[in-house]
Image (cartoon, rainbow, N blue to C red; front, side, top):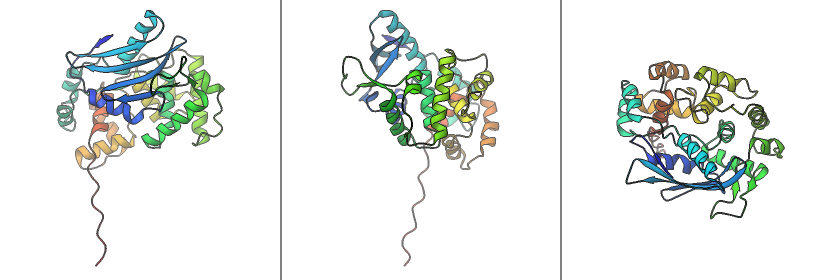
Length: 297
């Protein structure tokens, strides 16, 4: 399927984002193509996404049993890769801030990348709290080992397992996950909430309503709720202002690191597109650390 978008689109940024977070056996970035296993409407399969260099579109190869499932998958991919955003409109608003203007000029096609499944995004957010991206990737692999399943019909190249559903996580053994018990409990309480409310990861009427709904779940704090609202619920104004990466990006842009409160205050002018400003700050190159002093004479 051909999935058109409003240009420009920073496909290398999408591949970089996905490469750093790819779970072994579930996802793979090979060359310019992203591949992964999926579950949709009770069926499991695999997809491959690449950029259409001849036009403003992504090309999706979807391996599912029925045409209806394939069309449903295409809708999910549009949300996952943020294909309905209008980057020129967003840049016109955000570019009024002298912090952001040079970033937008350098990276005009950055999108707010999402995930295939709402619960998967939530699990990634919970497991990724206060650990590096690499460590979170390892822990997510453990979760898939404990609770996931093998791809029906055998491996598809480097893909052989499917990320677990909320029901599978509740039924799995999470006794030794290698992370704090409170975080394991949050994985389970969010799974319970997802099963109780099929619309948990849909966008509510406002960002505040979405965040309040998520924060009502035991173990979900402000950062986690904002992150899930951004990447799963597709709230364009979500902004996890205490995020270390955002503070680091702001420091690289200004030469002085703001406090979370100062960054959130500055971000008021970025509404209703704060999630896109966050992408720019995350993408901001971090200045190299000063060299260590040499040995004493």
